Amino acid sequence: MGKKYDAERAVSAEEGERHRDEILAFMSDWNHVAKYLLTYRRDGRARMRPVNAYMADGWHIQTVTQDLHFKTGHVRRDSRVGYLFSGMSPRERGNDPISIWVEGVAELIEDQEVVRPFLRWREEVTQTGENNPGDDYVPCLIRPTPHSVRAAASRGARAPVVYTDFPGIGALAGA
Figure 1 (cartoon, helix red, strand yellow):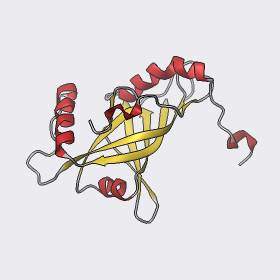
Figure 2 (tube, one colour; figure 1 turned 90 degrees about the vertical axis):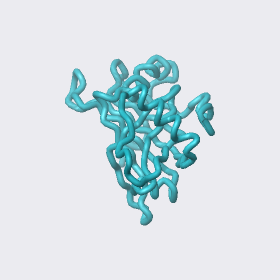
Figure 3 (cartoon, helix red, strand yellow; figure 1 turned 120 degrees about the vertical axis):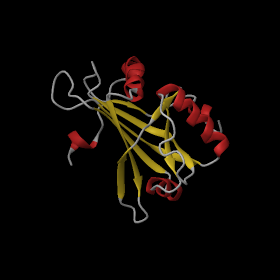
Figure 4 (cartoon, one colour; figure 1 turned 30 degrees about the vertical axis):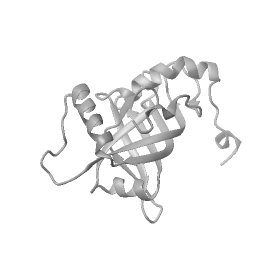
């Protein structure tokens, strides 16, 4: 496209650290932030769907799905995923909302010894139970390991805040 668009102009690592808590809080907001999951179809075309995404201990994102959903099959075949976290209201200046893009690879967790405790945690925190209790499906978790996070229109940041280092991200592995 041109030099201006070929390189990401990001804030310094120090400024990124100053915004980290604000960005994580934004991603954790269940009431004012829409969340979308990007997966890849068998033919390689992308598919984006609205989802519930829950943040736990820093950059750990977790999404509940069902064994019969398309996104479950997509992640089973191709672990590359993207998440878009988009504010549902315009920011103070300009008319685009704050948005955060996360790219990574996801683990599809089907082990009910891992999934059920997460569902209990979700019910305690959000006061929501099973999506379709009594239906014949198996709940699963999509748990990505982020490779990059790009936050645009973050308050006080003049350029995108980009993260590519996620210390401690393996802490939930196998949890």
